[in-house]
Amino acid sequence: KGSNLHVARARAVWLIGEWVEQVKPEIRQLAYNRISTGLQDPDLVVRVMATKSLLSLVNDFGFRDTLAMYSQNFLAPHMHFLLKLTTDVKELDARTLVTNVIRHIVEALKDGIKPVVGLIMQYLPTLWQHCTEADMLRTTLISILKEMVISLGPDSVSLHPFAIPVLRFSLDTQAQNRAYLQEYALELWHSVLYNSPTMTRDLVNLFPAWAVISVTSTEYLQASLEILESYIVLGNRPFLKVHGEVLKKTVCQLFSEVRDEGRELIVRHLECLSQRFPQEFPTVMAPIMVEIINTLLSTGKALELDRKANSSLHTDALRVQDKTLREFSRLISRLLFQNFAGTTEFIQKAFPGHAKQVIATILALWVDRLGDGWELYKRRVAFFAMCNCLATGEPEVLAHFADILGFASGIVAEENSDEARNCIPDFSSVRQVPESKRTERHRLQLMVADDPSLSQSVKRYVHETMRKLSERLGQQRFQILISKVDPLIINMLK
Image (cartoon, rainbow, N blue to C red; front, side, top):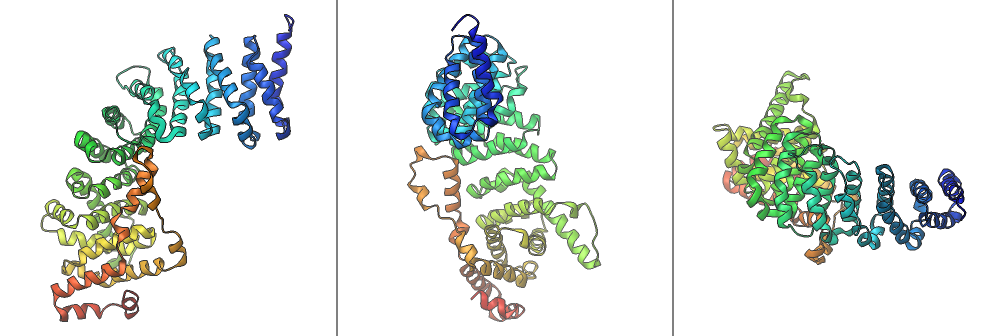
């Protein structure tokens, strides 16, 4: 401990990081012990060198093999020494290094950081407060906070008194020099919503910032839409009552400004809204509904022209990607299944005098182009929507009668396979989870469990549709219709 030995101690602990590949699992504990000694050294240089070496150890693949041992023996003391060091160093670079090491440890240990969350929160608010306006250290602090929220799950509400002000500060688009925080803040925002068991007033009051950020730039469109879906799933009807108009205006503006890929993303995240609020959706999202239906119509008509001409034209309508068409169709099929009357009424008003042909064209597109590309549960919803259309007995729809029953036979055959039976999810246990312990994972699983399409039998739905058709058309006309269907398909659906 002589006056010059601090240089030797600094070099010694520095070498651990330089030779990290030589630190085998059997000597990892010894290396961590040496780091602990370095982090307690009275000399700041030695402590900073120990911090750098710890970063190398954490980033090395060998760290994963010793997570349990590290968590049990070294996590708490190392975190204490590192946090203490953040208050002792004065240089920004050194403080950034230390917080970056904390971030890497937190990200690596995930749920394993729960024992030290309280310790970290003793320092994090002070570190945040001492940052300058354009301090990049804030991004690291936000990342640490996000990982702690994820680690605590529904118990992360204890972090809201700090997390909400951080979000307000970082999402303030009126303030200068804060744009660099937005990406990190959006990730934190989504994590807070995802892991919150209930909607709070503070979270509701944050939503207007979402609208401003979303229309300002589409750079973070994916993150923005994930936040929107979390608000819908968590907030439900009370949230829509407060911010429904802002949501409608913002989403419709976004939909009009982005290309097919962006529209596909928007519609995919809006499906939860259509499932939860099928009665209100056509009216609330009227501009988007019209655009979606027009896209499906133009594609369907272009395909019909190609068939008649026996050619393969590359019109603008046919350039729409199948993936986009499937997302659009999935939304419309959901509405025609859960709110047939309201959706057909909307189509009649939006396309006066052409509603029957609109529905017939959409059905032809589903059967002809999209059926084979849909997952089983999506095809079930589409089929129930088709049956609802068939039950009207309209000639334009009945023209696709045989194709729709063929579509149903494919679903029944796949449902009867062992592979499909083994993939049926069972979320009954989720209902046993107290609301105070639920996260978005539980809420989404409950949405699936409550999906009305899962409680329906394809065969029973066919039989009920056939009964309605027989009553509407009369037995003679109905039998003529049935005679045009392959007998094998009829037998499969019995």
